[in-house]
Image (tube, rainbow, N blue to C red):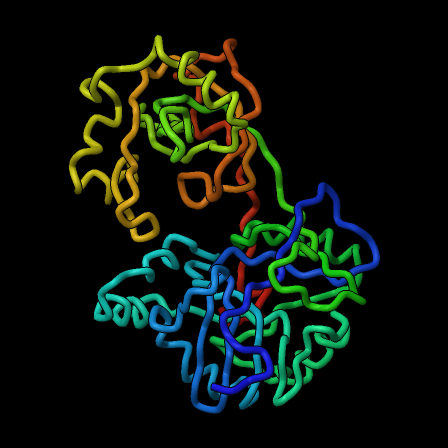
Length: 355
């Protein structure tokens, strides 16, 4: 491979802001795997956000990318999987598997799509220093006839349209809106764009914690919500604490600490089958490998309020933000019923009826 921009490339990132800023290019924020595609004739490398290759996990994309991208180019985009008219990150995560046979089986059962939204190089020319508006115009010309599973991400400079997307697209599983300054070059690894995401709060039961990698202080709180059957479901974690607070949380939660998981709603986490069915804490995953995920069970008597952006199925899609303790709330009142449900929106309407 011999391109003017060679792998690995760290993608340009976005910094969060509260409101959609004026005077920019706006795109939907896709909830998938960020992917930078390098193509040099028949050779294709798909790089992840961290620079590690994703190529082997998405074999079904290789021929469509060869058939639709320019012969020599570098394209920034997102790999997504659509199911029932919306993005499904759980199905996407299943692809990160060591067995090639399973990857290929999943590629046939739940094929992925590639959504292109930036152009870093074309032929012998690096475009990193070219303005966003020019890169977008070139990408639109190159992919004007894109067909599934390759898509050109919709974009607009109309802030009213961007606000409409922000309100409606969440129902299709998208994650908010990205705003890109029109005159800005591509800056690998820099937070040179802006992301606007939905923010909501929920009251959750604190059912345990994991230690921090630095030592015996709280790394993350394990959160639960009660379902309609009265079962406490593991829904995610909150983890962004100052070190002083991590130390204080150990002492604060000590009166609730259980000597063993016996009698805890998640006592069955030691059983492998339980992890597959309920996503309980404590098991290694494809993402964490051999990382120690041992946890400290707590009596389910404390409630905290957390900020979150959106749900993926029955759990928080991303790490939540700890806001405050809620001593006025009863743990049994922390149910899924409190969560706002976005109005469903068909992903096909975003990708031209082709997802």
